[in-house]
Length: 93
Image 1 (tube, helix red, strand yellow):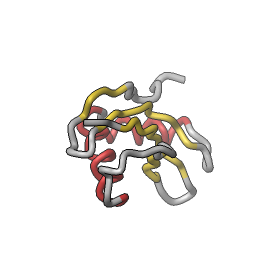
Image 2 (cartoon, one colour):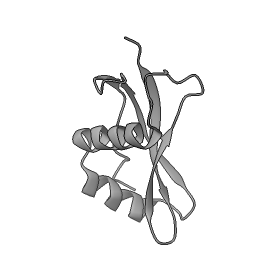
Image 3 (cartoon, one colour):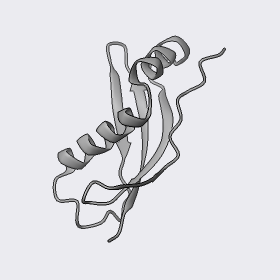
């Protein structure tokens, strides 16, 4: 079974944190519902990173309009996480 690697990040607007999933151009055809796989990617990221700490750090350190990378996660269409290179942004100034 094939898998796809998604780059993920948080985009900071004036009023919100937006979870961003960058989808590969040659995505596996096993992903039939874009909203479902993006929700899966987000859920798996927050199972691996401390959501509150990540968002607090981004709020303190990022500028409005900036997207902060959290790394990548590789997932199969059945939901199996194969690999990740996720990391929280540095908390120190």
